[in-house]
Each structure stands twice: as structure tokens, then as C-alpha cells.
Amino acid sequence: MAEIGRGSVFTTEAPVTPTTPTYNFVCAEAISAGEVLCQSKVDSGQVLKAQASDEDRMPAFGVATEGGGIGDTVAVQTMGSYNDIERTEDLDMQEAVYVSDTAGKATKNPPATSGCGQQRIGIAKAAGNMMLEFDLTVIWVG
Image (cartoon, rainbow, N blue to C red; front, top):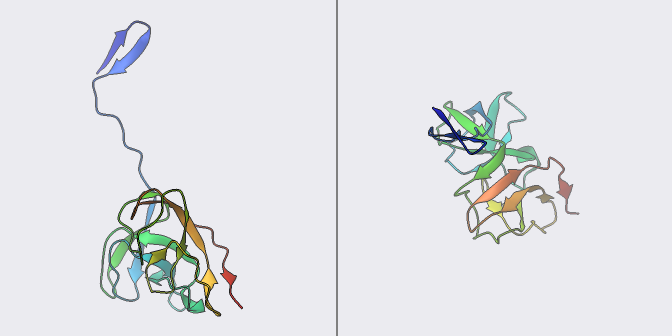
């Protein structure tokens, strides 16, 4: 219910929380909440854990908001704030976050090994929290 007070409108209702876009996909392998994902290049509509050292598991496009087994449907978040992302180490606030060469993980250090892809997936807000901003460009280390 809205109330009027000194020229402003105040509300006694709870504020509306913006929704974060999520999309449903089928798991091509077992997936845990917080893992970084890519689309399967073999089975349309299925997702796998992204991995910088495997061309078939790049580019990453989202993070699982829930876990699931092979054939289960999971929700995938593609942008916005995400808490407790799977990672190889704690993230540094305001620093870029990348796909790791460990399947499904994020890292603060872009992989530098020959044959690995470097893909920025967002900005860290805290040790395990980040703002998802997937750049679909992958730079391959030669």
C-alpha cells in the first residue's frame, strides 16, 4: 500500500528483487551448483563443465545454479551477481575472472599453458563471489 509523505511516495511493501536470467539445459555429465559451463558441441541443448585446456569445452557461457546428473535439467545463469562460484583459488576483489584448465572451475589467473584458451567470464566481488560478464572471445595460447 502506497503512502504519501512530503511530496514523495513511500511504500510499505517489500522491494522487488530483480530477477537474474537463467536458462534450462540438459546435463551431458554430472554437474554441481557453481560450476562454469559450456554448451556441448555434440548434443544440442546439453551442457558440460567448461575447461580451458579442451577446445571442445570452450567457450563458457554460464554457471549452474543447481546440480544434476546425466540427463537432468539444470538452470544456468548467464549474467548478474553469483555467489560461491566453484574456483581453483580465492578471487581478488575487482580483478578479472577466467575459465580454469580444471573442468568447471573459475580462476583469477588466465591459463598460460600452450593449448589452453583464455576466456574472461567476469569480475570478482569477493573471495568466491563475482559479477558474471561472459566474453565469448577465447584467446588460445600457442
